[in-house]
Image (cartoon, rainbow, N blue to C red; front, top):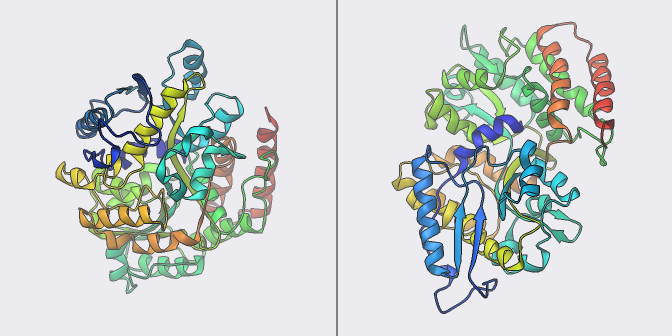
Length: 453
């Protein structure tokens, strides 16, 4: 869910490199090198409250400026990195950064409102653009035009407790790939004794609707029509999502009696060692370890069941350019993004430094390149400098080549709130009428989507 993922996204910064060899030199320009001196402002500099990330950022700026002495990078650390409520005012007032941070979910609206520069004629200077995952780059494209570059990309998965799998006689190296397998595994985990929950699910605070979307996408369904104007979740796939949860809750008794759970509830349960499985991105493992007393080695991540060959709810962030930015600023900004966000071994992919700083290395995100030469190089560096058990993420990594990223729907939070009602009903009422729940949700969603479309 966007609001929750935004809280977690700062955890995903893996390191911000010192290596400068491939950035050119004082007397040798890169393909997109600028001609004169230029200063660029760049958003989402780590704040001083994150001292390790801030230190890495400043070191990277110094290294970059040494390699490109005609470019000055001025970082801006406003929190949150982008605020839709003040975005237009910053543009109008001239305070928007030249290179500004953006969540995937805001890109389309920014392009439609012409609030970002078209960088198509310059982006070819970034050598690794051709290797970026096409579904990732498509986020920043409108037809043949390009408006930005990604920094982070991930999709949802099945987070599971490997320790409980072993205790329940399940193979932690072979997690469930179908919902029937999830049901079977959840029953075995719940049978371990009082307090054990096989599968946990959200159903309040918009988190239920968020997970409904993730499970719907994995089954091949859609939240809205292709044009985003009408709801599409009242479908066989949508019914299957609710029917499976209803059966696990009331027939299998594998989901526990406590329901109406929100974001921290499942994290706390997972950290407490009695929750077997939940839907979540790989960074859930980091949060459980850092904030909820779990241990990295106890957890694994697989793809969302049945998502292979279909889609998985994805998220991420990146950078776009101020529509008033000059050509020189755009070219300088692209050089910075190539150095800081897209080069194996440098910037955010400087895993050697991250390890030295004591930050976790080994999570399979961001996944910008898929199974390409840069992607393979990044994965090799992750393993080389890993501080977490990378093999625990193998089921997730191996599935990615056969899964298409799918973004959140228009007006996601409002739709999620509507679907919280359906999710909470099937988990708290044994006789909940799934057909009526989806029909009512569809009617409300259509009214929401009809506004300002």
